[in-house]
Image 1 (tube, rainbow, N blue to C red):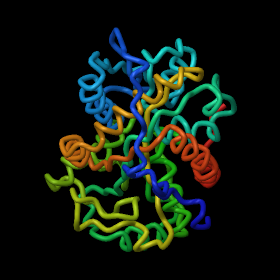
Image 2 (cartoon, rainbow, N blue to C red):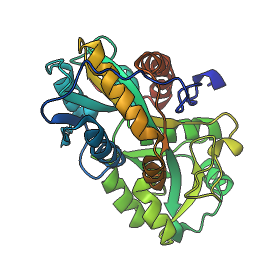
Image 3 (cartoon, rainbow, N blue to C red):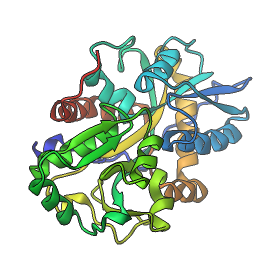
Length: 323
């Protein structure tokens, strides 16, 4: 897979000086729902709650997080696509719901571009490759050598077929020219538990979900899936340093139902960008291993368009398909 198919940060989106103009035409008069299409406690939920609290303070109305999990994020996404386009129902979308799922599912009950109004990209998130410390593996090359020596014997977990963990693992196997066995779970937390119990050999996981175990010495972090090292694990190299060209960068962002009035979109985008610029939010996201993004609604729309073929290629490599 050529470098053009990897998942780089969209140029110019990382909190550029291209500010979104504030609009005084819309002022919310009641609480706003922020739908998270995944369960409570995961990295997406954590990010949503951080942004919701700060955004509510700027808008003068509470932003209430509501978890609507199921079908790989499609249930929550559909709820927002069908909601009134009045600014009071938003979605914290992810690279899974709006880039992977269109290629993964035979059909979706919504169109990821037609049925949503982009507001702003909010954050980029790395996955980290971890193994049980009890395995004694200390370097990616050791893992690759083991995988090549024992084709199909290494097993890796994921949050399910087509999840970011699955796609990151499949790309790793393809780049490393080795064969591994996929063990899908109904959620990443279960995979983490089995990795700790020695039932899995490796796992690609959002950094925040395994950081505590790495720091406690229960897991060994071998590599980060992004180009840059994480400040939380500065000694852990990007996987691309060992397998040139490898990069998988997760992301999330705010969407509203299509036909939401432009002044509403502009106001929410402006306030969200202001939130993402604050040192407090940058620090809180950094503690989760995330990097704040930002940008205009138009930039976010273009970013999603560009991401769709990249994640579709990862789905193709993985062989995942859900009818």
